[in-house]
Image (cartoon, rainbow, N blue to C red; front, top):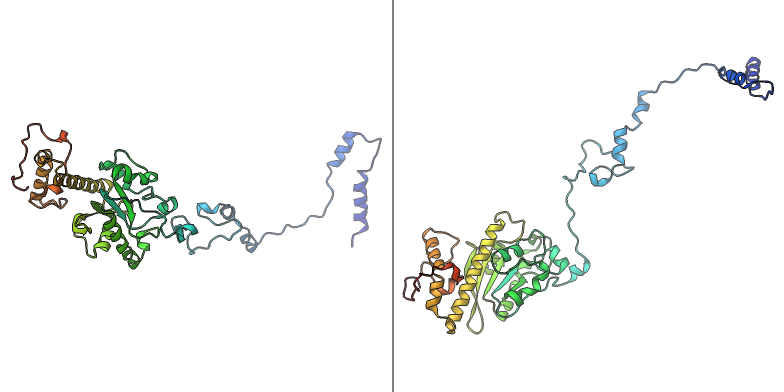
Length: 351
């Protein structure tokens, strides 16, 4: 119960704020500086238990940091020690999801093919980038288009958007063994991959390309049903109904993920294939009487000697035997042959 003395003191304190016309401003301010008398009280000390309930500033900062930096979401509890890390290095990449129209499309990337092509390049199946764009080898790290240009198959570096121009301007074609698009070729089952072989054989016998080039050792082994001893020109020949045939060539995959073969090594395979194509075309022209073989042999002497040298050194990059078939030797530019070279006759050893 409040005592009468306390009530009186409170009334005296309030009286100082009552209006008095005779009081000056200085007197009023002086009286305001007098504190109100109160009974002193002891301040309670915060217990240790209560302080632990207050979050630290570091925890509050982490709780409001965006999730892209690898921390927790706003208003979510701070991860306990020993829990799985949420840093970007520990998170697995989410697999790309193809649109429904791509998933149901039986052929998201159409074959680019025509009759009597020099080379029909065959890949295992379309990747995600190719399926979304509708064009072959659309991946930004794929080496196909740079290798095609650097080997001389094209006179300029083409974009994947220009793949449809290959048959018209360069007599080249593109196809896939399996049509379903996946992120990696490993996502296809072996049975699904083998199922595309009969259809590919039908295309080859119908369109009759000079060469079929399998881009990847694995795809060739699926097609041939045996192990590939070495890349390059293979022994198989795919016969046509009229008696002709298509030669088979295998090279490394042009995917940027293939670390065993860097881009210069892949270009070397493209160059070898181009030489084989040129040599085959020369032989075909000679058989129909359009080319004098004696003059052709003089033009290709440099390449013949190069083949003998590789054979003597046991170079496994050379796929020709000691006796060279003129049909397998490319005809190069005249600028590579010395003007004093005497024409090589048909009776010379190896021809």
